[in-house]
Length: 463
Image (cartoon, rainbow, N blue to C red):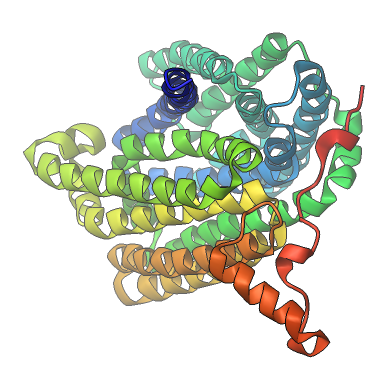
């Protein structure tokens, strides 16, 4: 018996490490395609065109988070670790919802392109055509991770990256240095990968079921929609506001600093692919360990972010900055590394609390935390842009993310107290006992006596 326990623990840790490993590998592959286009634009087209590209990119990020809120976030909460038959039926509706979101948002972006001028107009035109494929491809990634098959997500992103190489080479050879063609090539490659995802999953996205999916999961999906778009919308308004206050070049400098943090963001986003499904498994099997898991995620990721920021400070003056960003961008971007590092560390702290809140299905709590932290983020960024241009806005972001981390962890603490799935501490049990002994004058019943906010997926897609 004593020998079996360490073996079981070792096997469990191996499976967890394997899932996180595929998350990191997949995000690395996904980031290759994004970084290839971003660095090409930064080096070849200069700060102003890179600023136009950045405006389109944050718009893509906004549409992506809306799709995740409606489609993949509820899918991760309710269908992580299900049997394959149930997964396929849910995945068809989930990916159909993502595709529908891409068609609607792409149409709106094309309308916006019609009223813009210059580089932003071309960038938005290409984005509008590419959004359906981009959002569908992303939904396959999250669907595969919910099933515990991160390898398929990695292969899908590999197809996207390999498909992108030939058009980028052709554009380079024939000197089509236009933000439109670069973004069009990027979106076309994502569309090919999205089609391959259906082959991998043996599932056809059901766009006709999109409204049914949204209605069935409205208790989570609509809140996650507002939560995600609040966050992404704050980032989008920050970018637009920075452009209006300090110009497109300042937008380019901030985006260039974000590119320098790219290798760490591969780790951050790769782990984020797995943190919620893993937290859901922990909640199901060992709910008392959820708090420790969230703390470990936050501290571990923040420590890695700090280490990468320190490495950049050493490497940039020694030629790395000029190599990656060219002579015009690297020096302004290098001045943003320190505040950007602290900003990223704040996001890492938030990520630990986010995993716990989503695993608990505490959508009201996570929505409240996101709205408050997004307002703080937007206000600090715009105030920083007004006071100090690009440097000021990144400093404002650093302050905002750490204040936001306080908000998120406070909401997680309240959600754990309200959940009947988290074992009570001895102090909490004693307090509840005293309140019950005191009678009705002691106030409302403990949150532990109230039903959980989590939704039972056994009623969905029953065979």
